[in-house]
Length: 135
Image (cartoon, rainbow, N blue to C red; front, side):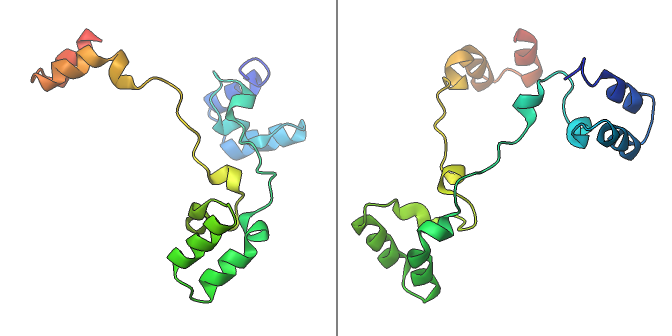
C-alpha cells in the first residue's frame, strides 16, 4: 500500500484535507477509503470481505415467522433441532448470512502460555511498569 499510494499519504501529511485527498483518489480511479487505512499493511488485509451468502431470513423464514407470531423461543429451537438445523439461529440477525455470524474458532495459542512468567510477576504484586520493562 505504501509505495502505490505514497503520494496520497504525503498529501495528508502535508496537511491537505482528507476530502481533497479522497477526490484525488477518485480522480485516479482508486478506492477513496485508502486514506483511512494503515499504509504499513497490505490493501487486501484491510478490505472487508463482502458477505455473498443469502441472509438467514430467506432460508429460515418459517422459523422467524414462528417467533413473530409469538411462539416461545424454546419451541422454535426444538423445531430447528427436529429439522437438524442450528437452534441458535433464532438469536442471530435475519438480515445477515449464517456464515457471517458464526464464530470462527481461535486456533492461536492463548497469550497466557506465551507470557506466563509475566502474568506470574503481576500476580506476585510487581508493579505493571516493572513487568513492562521485563517484556
